[in-house]
Picture 1 (spheres, rainbow, N blue to C red):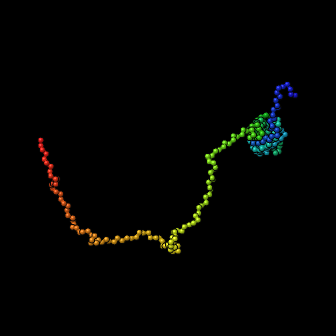
Picture 2: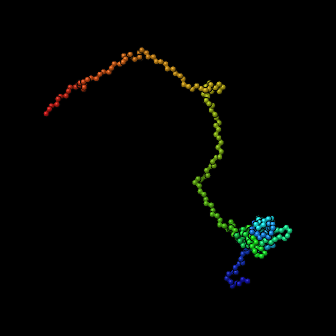
Picture 3: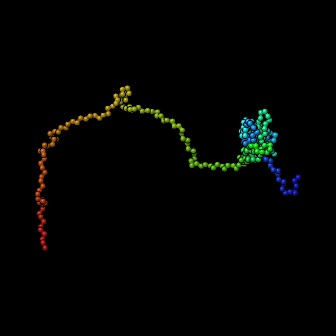
Length: 262
């Protein structure tokens, strides 16, 4: 009973681990280096899994001998206070009872705390000698190593607002532009409004191809009249006048007076 003179209440009881009723997934992968119980033929092993009052048996691996493979999965309902699984390996016989190969105890501390375990466990014979190994893969969903839920995780930061330099978003670019078709077509060549006779005659088109060569122009001789014809001259022309032998030529001005001598 609580003592009223105590200043603090007694500590609460430790919380339960909460494994009772949980499902443990066990996969029997296979065995290695098993003890050989056959003298002539190859042995046919199988595995028995026992947890509390629950028992499972794998199929018989015919001619599995020392390294059988099973790959079988079982679901065990956990019981509070039982933290190990008993495993036994037997050799199946047709005409006699099955031969015991070895057994082992699988500890559940790692899979219950971490949620996963894939170790190989040693098997021992009835005399305690080494009888091989068995490999198991175990999964437990309600382990203590689970990640925090979304409620306990801190909320994400709010998104930052985005600001734009324009008041309204730009219009979307048109994905299809219809072709522009003119409504009025002008006839070619154009028809004169003054006279309908100059319109192009489509019933009698001109002969093609057109002759685009330039017209041939004949050079006519030019005849001079008696009035415009130049006067006849003697041929060859007279020689040019000869230069005077006197140099310098006589001047029309009087000569300067002589300079006196001193």
